[in-house]
Image (cartoon, rainbow, N blue to C red; front, side, top):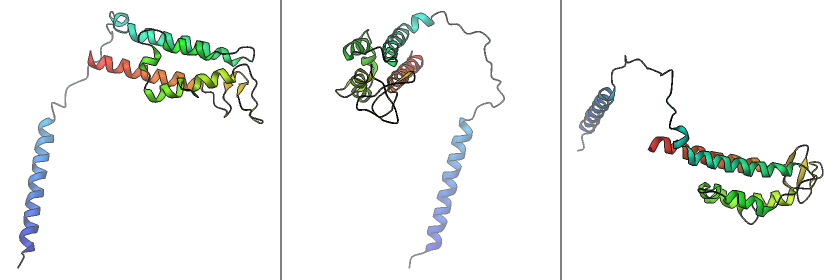
Length: 172
């Protein structure tokens, strides 16, 4: 006959042993808890410009692209997809170089944001009676669905730049 008391006893012993090992690992990994945190009053940033040259250049490229896109927020201004693409691909690394394939297709694809920006710029937009191109409403440029999508481009690129800066600070 099968003895369930022995099985239950073995399970209890195994649980106690595993709990003991877990407790030893956790307690041995703890260090002196009485150390005080010392926060410096001054930070040495003498090498910041040298260390962040690439990131600052990419931020400048993003600023140039966003400035060009913002020109479309006036009915008097048209945007050209070619100009936007040139700004997006300028520099080394360019915004295109650091953008993921997913966002690159959204930004620069055949029906991407640059195409939508070119189509919407120079038109008026009324949310009550949407049109097929989008346009300027107030002081913002919207696509035909009512989205101010130039911000999506800027935020996407800023996220990538932020990740690059973070990784560089960790790795170097």
